[in-house]
Image (tube, rainbow, N blue to C red; front, side, top):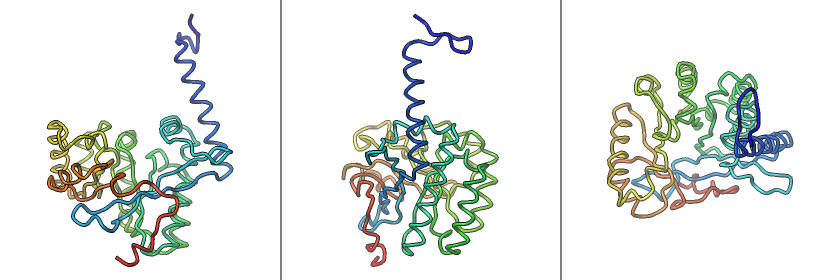
Length: 270
């Protein structure tokens, strides 16, 4: 049995996936419209001094009408190419700027899609937030752009970054290794931070392939003047190998799960 859609034959699985994505999009649209979005904060620590977070990543938590968090893996790909993804970026940025304004010792990274660069509401959110909070916030804001997203419009991303880096904003290339970065563009991007995708960290203490790949990424980061962050660090053995390999920062459940109400007072005492 086949289903004719736009002159093509889709399998029952294709139809089921399309229906699921429509339902997910509708759920996220309703959540964003009703402000059912929160940030969960996960610490990122220096490899040589893991006691106090160097900065936090603010991860969007989208809630259904019952207050249950919708797992990001269920919607993140579906919203990437839709306007609801841009609206979600706006709300996430707004929440992040508010957290920075309220916590003067906080340094925070916020995720965004390269597609939001040309979205007028997102730009307005950034400009008004910085104008309200002053220059101290821009120096503590990190914008994370995924590797796959950056490659959609590399020239636009490059110009966008140059304009905001002059205001003190830091940029991180997220999920490095998971996408299709052209090294020609990597040379021109001038990202400040390189975040190595967690798939290369899993089992690294005993996986020679991952060891070689991560060491190569560390070398790339150093060559282009970028700090490196290893994502999804879960064991002490992983952390020890990564520190020895020259990774600058570590992020993962070993140092803390994303929390809706972290103790930012620790930063003030550091």
